[in-house]
Amino acid sequence: IQMTQSPSSLSASIGDTVTITCRASQNIDSYLNWYQQKPEKAPQLLIFATSNLQSGVPSRFSGSGSGTLFTLTIASLQREDFATYFCQHSFLNPWTFGQGTKVEI
Amino acid sequence: DVQLLESGGALVHPGGSLRLSCAASGFTFNNYAMTWVRQARGAGLEWVASMSGSGDKTYYGDSVRGRFTISRDNVKNTLFLHMNNLRGEDTAIYFCAKDVDPDDYGLFDSWGQGTLVTVSS
Image 1 (cartoon, rainbow over the protein chains, first blue to last red):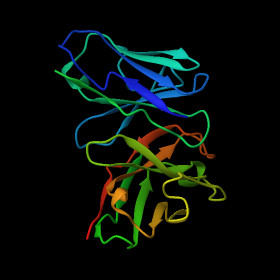
Image 2: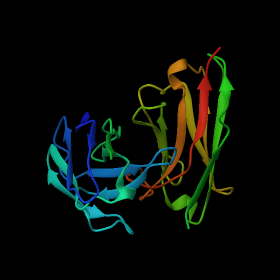
Image 3: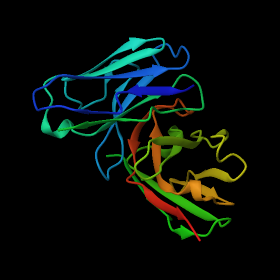
Image 4: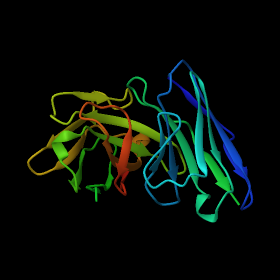
C-alpha cells in the first residue's frame, strides 16, 4: 500500500490553520495514523485510527477521513507545531509511511 | 515512563555486518511487539522489521528480507537487529519502536532516539 502526502512542505504563520492530506493507494478503512517529528528527534505518535488523539496531544490537532483519503488539521498553529508530519497505515503488513510534510514558519 | 535506547550503530564497509540493540524499560516488554524503522538523511520513514511480543512471529520489509534478522531477549528486555551484507542504501538512522499490541498491530506509540548506521567504503 502506497501512502502519498500533500503538500510535501508548507509555510504558515502562528495562529494559522493548516491541513495536510494523505492518500492511500487502496482502501485502508480507518487504519491511518499520524506522527510528528522534530529535527534530530524521534517521531512521536500524534493521532491513531484516523481521528483519535494520543494521550497528551493538544486538541488543536484533529484527523478525519476513511477509505483512501485522510486529513490532518492543525488549528491555531503554535510555534512548537513546526515540524514534519508523517501519515502511516496500519491496515496490513507491510506498514508504510507517507513521504512527510514539513510545516515551516 | 517507557524508555527505548538504541545502540550499535557504526560505520561499516559494504558487505559487512552489524548488530543493533534496543534496551527497553518502563513497560512489560514481552507484552508488546517491537519494530525497527529507519530513516535515511533528509528522507522519510521506512518500516524494516517487526517481532511479536512472544518472539514467535517475525515480519520483514522487502528491502531487507534475507539480509536482516530481528530478535529479542525477553529476559533482558532487549530488541536486536542483525544486519548482514550491508549496502549503501542501508545507510540511515535506525529507530526501535514499541507497538501497542503483542502481535504487530502496526501502531507505534513509543520510539527510541535512534542509532546511525553508515555503510561506506
